[in-house]
Image (cartoon, rainbow, N blue to C red; front, side):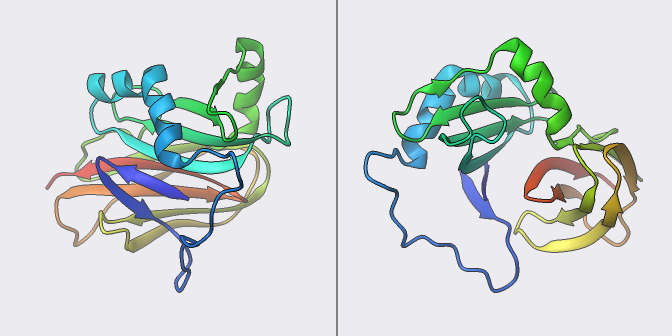
Length: 197
């Protein structure tokens, strides 16, 4: 899982994990630079220019909830503190934008992990974190600093499917941006929050 904060790539993984940067993509597959160019042209660039505190999460994955689960896609999710998320799927083989019809998209929401914008944001002394998990599973909500270091775990237990919320009240931390990472099963989502003393 690779996430981009502005121009800076960040990675979240288990301690000791080494990124498989020596692996090559299969023949005819497009790389992440080519794929994100498609997402940017399809609306990602406009999203970044018209919203604040934009965070882009990138992932090469199977199209699990699509009509063809054998298809491999680059998935780019654009998050902002001022707008709903936008997701772009790019076919990893031909570089075409994968369209999702409205009916399919509405059915997809119940099956997706969702981390909603925290409120308030920026915040002091606390912010409310609301999230939706598609099925009962072990859930971890952790807070990271902008260097990618885990500084706090807010939730680490099995939870039922549906919407949940937790309040984060930082203690002894400096003002500035932090990342909230939600992990449930093999899905994850990230949001940026700003703590102001």
